[in-house]
Length: 112
Length: 111
Image (cartoon, rainbow over all chains, first blue to last red; front, top):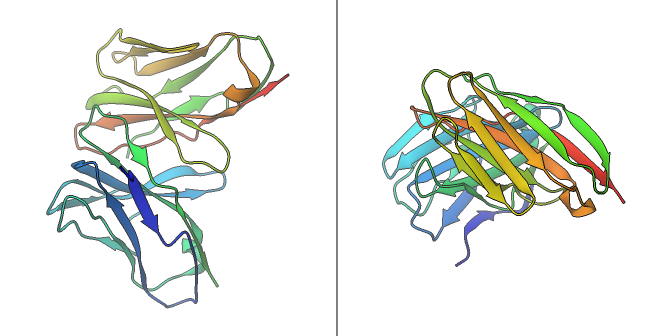
């Protein structure tokens, strides 16, 4: 099992560019979430999904879109990158609410 | 948005010391409480998930308790070792399905 796979690992974007951060899991987990990690702010929830076709907003959803067309994939789209979106992004998945989340290795994004 | 508070923010102990951290969260709409261990340059790893008031979980030298009525959880480490150095995160899971993390307690264990 690969677990939770995030690509790319590193990315540099120019302000205004758009891109998609990929997240895939092979554990047949229903629950998936995206977090961003910023110094002094801990992990903040961007968007989450409780199953294919179902998504909802987290704490900091502005500037990001998600979709969940399959159980395996949960891509995060940056619509128009801003320097404030410079961060490390983590994708995580769980079988249900009482299962611990498995985290991907993260994507380090820099917006210049 | 859930207000999750962890204390202390950081802790420096000597090898062999026992220590504990606190996580407080709103008790309304509660479903489960997660604890994670996060080593530098790695990804968070799940330690415990607790759901019932009075729940206690143990994994080696690490244990946790849960009080859902008053909205707090304690994480204990007995006989800390340098390899226990990490940030420990708690995250309540509410009925809506959001897992919201506290800012963590950073533990440093000196040999």
